[in-house]
Length: 316
Image (tube, rainbow, N blue to C red; front, side, top):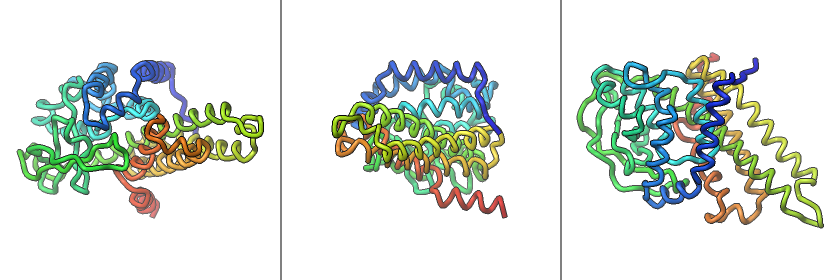
């Protein structure tokens, strides 16, 4: 089955791509990594104004959705430009806050970009708790509003600032949290990974056309062409899985899409690093902003083994 975007979806992707290209996201990412959130917050409001967060929020609470396919389109572009911040976590928060009371209280602000949210992972850490205003802790007895974040901990990706969330706090809704939040989070993570992988491939293709050895571009070497072709094929195989999962929203389909997209992005990152050589390791070179994120997204909201388990249990 082929999943082709319609005219409106392609225009939406194009408008986000143009906006993010003009936003100089590498500079925003570097500031965010140092704890300077001013540029990131400004970009966050622009993303919200474009309707991205509203795609996960029902219309009765100020949103446009839920529209998982369009949200996937948007997150591919966010990944392509390495936009920092708890983007996936804000989507997960929108699903977790589906009960009437918390929804009326928080969802309009999330959709409008006035509130940045983060959610504690099973490890106890949350992404960018120092930047978020809304800190949610899912627990078996219900969804809690955490009193606040702890100190920032180092992360593999400097732009992904991990913070522990204090336990307890106000009980927003009793009972086990909505399991659909994990499905939406994995879908958004997979879309981010696909966009990131596409950006890495584009940057690497441009690099091998310019870098020369023995008087010719290294992109003319057969071994280089094979590596790039393998990366391209892996990413293109991930694309229909991703959009198929966005249509079905079945947990197994989404887990398969996350597994494939994140593994393809990680393999593309390894290829990009090898073909760039030593310059790819340097923090001053923009490629590093995508390389570190590819590794981090691979395990965010479900490791490869966890996603495989979901797929295998569904098949069995």
